[in-house]
Length: 270
Image (cartoon, rainbow, N blue to C red):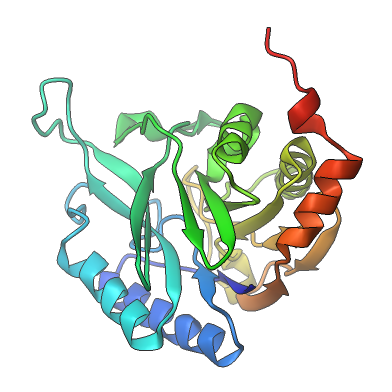
């Protein structure tokens, strides 16, 4: 299965971000991809208000993504924000950090479980956590879903693999800082080896590569999106600038990896 990873920079304007999504989705389709992954916060970049733009999964922003996916006959994975809920089921003034997955015969979503309360940023101030892993199948490949800070928690990736995932998608808007690019690269490779899955690590591009000054602690992206093999080898990667990469995923590679390195079968729980 040919997939594409779209490394872009989003901003405040929802329509402009949809235009970016449409452009890169068309380029992905022209390149032969059956699935294209966009970053976390594709709907609106962090550092901007989120509660005023959060919408249900059947709202206008998500429906436009669906229209693009249908028009192109392409599976699209993209980060958006949906309304949060309190324990009593009412709105609590927060949002959920959601991955929308839509395309031919596919419709699902994942709410980010591990919230980024680290490096001086408190995502939990404005975001409610998800509670359940989510997988979906496109073609002959089952994908697991994760978002940004989730990548630091191996158990989620193992849970996805136990649910049949042979590829894990990680959509991110990674925070910049000393050593952060190296951590992103290391974690992407580690999660692939942990679970003998492909890892599709899709991050927002580094805004500074486009002359945009980054202020505050909001995570706005560092780039370095990559596709990693189940042995931790980087198959394709980008640098900091916006771009589109392609990779061909072969489930037979996973079968071979799991025969040679049966970490899932050998795993013990404590």
